Length: 250
Image (cartoon, rainbow, N blue to C red; front, side, top):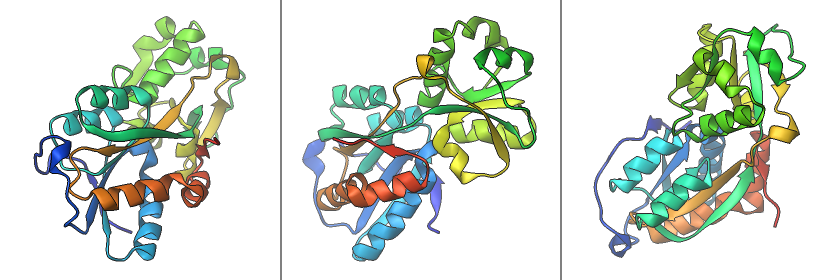
């Protein structure tokens, strides 16, 4: 498996005019929730196009978006929502038209052996509830808006354990720091150490959209376009489904 790094600033560029095609590296930044699927996609892409090498950085979507805004050198961005993509468009950091290509669902998970919940109101009987930071991380924003929809946010907020990203919320269950966590359905596919306690009810389910975008900071326009197409076509759909995402159908 390739090395996955927590994305940090690795070199500044300015604007779309810096594009060229003289590098064999394609730097892909993805939301933490998409880590495993992107890794599998990258391995398959490199097998099909051995002259290109994918370098993969992960963090919360909001963290990555701020780094891209500051000029981080990157080619492709997989975001967990549309809002941060629109923010980057406003900053002149996105090249071309972004692609909404995946959907997802929220689920409530707990430790192995935990009793399933009958409804969202059963959260009131639990202790700490981990979720990605609801102030800016998409998974947490989705969770907060859905709990507000159900009229439960104000009664639960004092027991919320905010985490850096959705994978950290999952880790809070494994470590015993929380009694439940709100994560994506796709996150459950990467671990057997938690149980799904409740799939989010449809009446308050958020419309989750994962979005892919080419970045103006890319020094490898050709490779970036090829990897993005590979990730969002029928080949890519196979990988995303394998990891619990649901590709959007035109």
